[in-house]
Amino acid sequence: LNRFTPGDDLIITEGEMDALSIHAAGMGAVCSVSVPTGAPQPSENDSSSRRYVFLESAEDAIKKAKRVILATDNDEPGKELARQLAKRIGRNCYRVVWPEGVKDANDLLVQSGHDGIVSLLEKAEPWPVEGVRSVLTYRDEVMDVFDNGLPRGHGAGVISLDRYYSVAPGMMSVITGIPGSGKTTWVTWLLYTLAKNHGMKFAMFSPEYPPKLQIASLATLSTHKLLNSSVNPISRDELNDSMDWISKHFAFLDDADCSLDSILNRCGKISDNIDGLVIDPYNYITLTGEEIQTIAINKMLVRLKQAAVDMGIHIFIIAHPQKMYREGGKIPVPRGYDISHSASWFQIADFGLSLDARPDGLECVSDVVIWKCRYSWMGKTGTARLEFDNLIGEYSEPGTALQSV
Image (tube, rainbow, N blue to C red; front, top):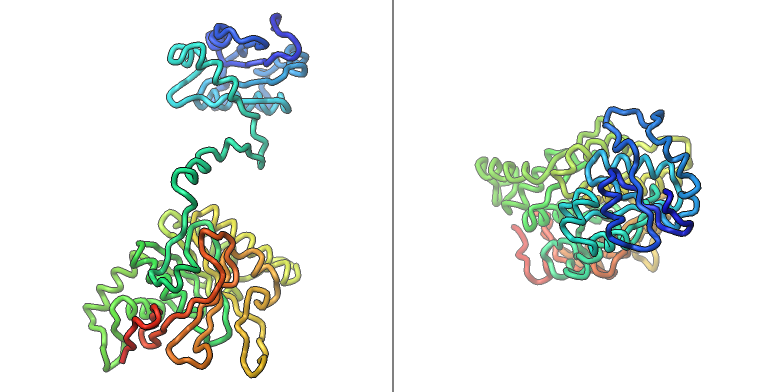
């Protein structure tokens, strides 16, 4: 510290050779020093250790330094030393980001010479504050966007729908519609197409729709044959083969515990093996606490959205609207602000969709109204008109489907 001048960068290394290596780079306005006792051992209780008493004698230099740059070794003990130093030094603390395969300053000097040391110190970044991240944290993600563009999610393979809606991880779709509009049927078909076309896997929490009925619907979609029917019946072997395929793409959460904690905990344990979670409908979830329902729903949706991001999955949640009254002799299609008890249904959703069966009195037709799309590269708002095969439960491009008999 005898060479330190107020306004210099103060670089703290783990070993003397590293401090000498930085000094050898010949940079002006820099003072490099090493800690006298090296890095802590994993078993050491650093909160009460006297290992860092040397900082007391360096207090004046630390206060007057332009930057305090931590250049400890690029291994676990070195990283722990840096964490402990940063905790004690506080403000004005920076860290170096070691190049791939470099252990310490001496190693860098050998591999890259003086220029490598100079570049390392010039690129030192502020020590991250918990919950605050620098632009450089996102460098790789931004460069990926530069190289590959913004990613669009997976579509159902139906052009009329795919131009409006796609399914991507870290996002949440809210689906609504009046009773009988086909919300559950449409979501089941959507998941089937995503599983068939893209190999996606889903966890299903559907207290109103027992697993045996969901599996039967999926089997009908996969075989285009009917259970318990004298017309176009599915055979036992076909049903078994279909269930083998379904078992690779769908898992079912029982409703013995309907708390959000339980649902998310179970999903967390299988999150590496699923791409999405379906909650159908939301009102079976037990909302805890004494808050009014509007606040409780907001908290629930925030947790679900964060869970989608943390687990890297897409969450589909079906919500019933409030009672809709006829306007001009017709019941209007509900949107996000029409869902019961909270405006958060619109505000927090990434995608918002409504099902409208038999629009304008048309049989075998359904409209999917997309009333919310957060990101323009993922889709857009508008209405997708689809043909609907009510026996198979299948939606298709208008004019391309043959109705089942």
